[in-house]
Amino acid sequence: MSEENSILISQLNDFVFCPVSIYFHALYGNLDKTLYQGAAQIDGTHAHQAIDNKRYSSRKNVLQGIDVYSDELNIRGKIDVFDVDSGVLTERKNKIVRIYDGYVFQLYAQYYALTEMGYTVKKIRFHSMSDNKNYDIKLPSEDTEMDKKFKSVIKAMKEFNMESFHQTNIEKCRNCIYYPACDRSLYVD
Image (cartoon, rainbow, N blue to C red):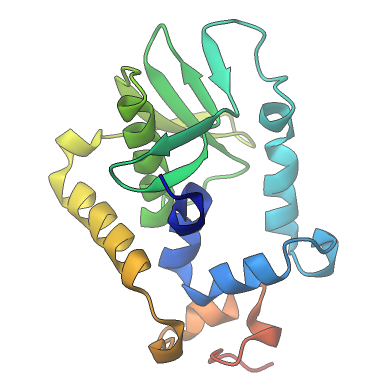
């Protein structure tokens, strides 16, 4: 797999939200996040610290924060938690109000990567840490429409041309942390 041409799993949700946000995320990547992130993004970063520092579980059969990849889809990234014995893959979010397609696509990417790496994934779910709720998601084989959408987004990411992109959804711009710097933003204070 070519790392420079691979899609990062974390970019799937960003791309669905707005493809240009990936550019700004990379541009601001080394800056202090408090300069440009909102409270929700900062809370999300803090929520993942137990995973990033591998403090979520000390059980040997629980994989946490490991790198995963899929040569077939040319994607790479990290998982949150995978219980090898039960086959349960869990993506943790600080607070889930709604499950967006981009969230599901990240989970599907992790699923495909783990499967290609030889693991047996029997169940995928989200965990909302603020209210301690789990949300089961159908496996790609159980939701062929969502799986088609997922693979369509990967194809669109590979073919994306920023020069010809025009945002059409002002609500996305209104909720974007990068709108003040974006020349494509539809939102003006």
